[in-house]
Amino acid sequence: MGYKAEHSLFDELANELDVNEVFNIGDSQQARTIMTAIWDGYEVARSL
Ligand SMILES: Cc1cc2nc3c(=O)[nH]c(=O)nc-3n(C[C@H](O)[C@H](O)[C@H](O)COP(=O)(O)OP(=O)(O)OC[C@H]3O[C@@H](n4cnc5c(N)ncnc54)[C@H](O)[C@@H]3O)c2cc1C
Image (cartoon, rainbow, N blue to C red; front, side, top):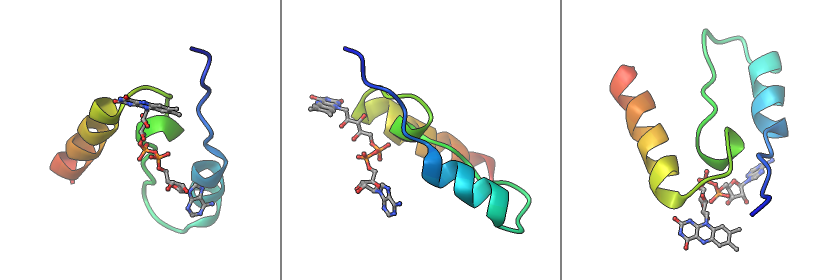
């Protein structure tokens, strides 16, 4: 219904933190639903 991802915090952290990887999940990646946000977190946690 026209919601947009707001990922400025992710961009800031990805640019400023001295780490290998910063993950963008949930509505920050793409505005969707609670279920997809939970799956994003699950998939990232599983890949670590
Ligand atoms: C009106 C509305 C109704 C919805 N209804 C449904 C529904 O019925 N079913 C469904 O599945 N989904 C629904 N959604 C979508 C669902 O709410 C989102 O997909 C889900 O909440 C995304 O989770 P998230 O953790 O990615 O983001 P969020 O739940 O938005 O969590 C992000 C958190 O980060 C915090 N934050 C942001 N910037 C900063 C910062 N700089 N520093 C510190 N904290 C920060 C925010 O305060 C927030 O607490 C609805 C969304 C809206 C707007």
